[in-house]
Image (cartoon, rainbow, N blue to C red; front, side):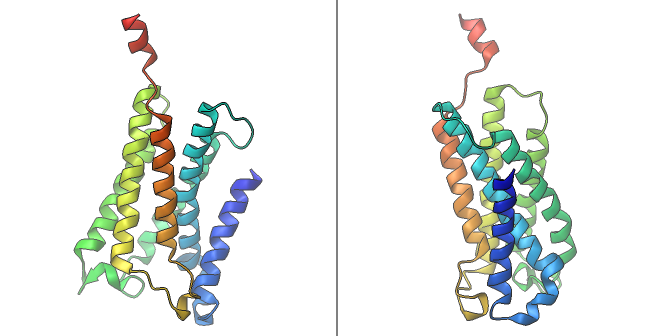
Length: 201
């Protein structure tokens, strides 16, 4: 559990440094705006860790948190991310998502893929799937999460400057984590359905 706490702590600390180090006025936005960024990045990295641990276990490795624990940690972050993001969804916080008083194409894409990601996570949390179906649903979930994060990046840009402590944007780090998670998931290959195996034997 300490690894999960450490990952969340690092993500929140990164958000604080990036948004407050050279812009102390942003400290007033710590409770939601800045914390939300840290929590969302940690959630994406937790999903990546879940598939990394799954891949390691298929290779016979032991130790570390099991994939389900990492998945639940990511689900926690995603569920916390949604209400905080909806509260902040206004031009004063995310002007890049708006065209006048309406959401822009990129803004709507962010919301669409975010909602689809949450729906996929809900389905993944159910225990009725076969191993093969769960693999494919996991892949769809990560691809949709990739689209959500990339849409965010296209809308917001890199913003690698003094006001952001010259640190890479958090959407970029999240995207790298998601890509890594997809890679480890693909390496694990879809397991065959036990019932299908029995039917063909």
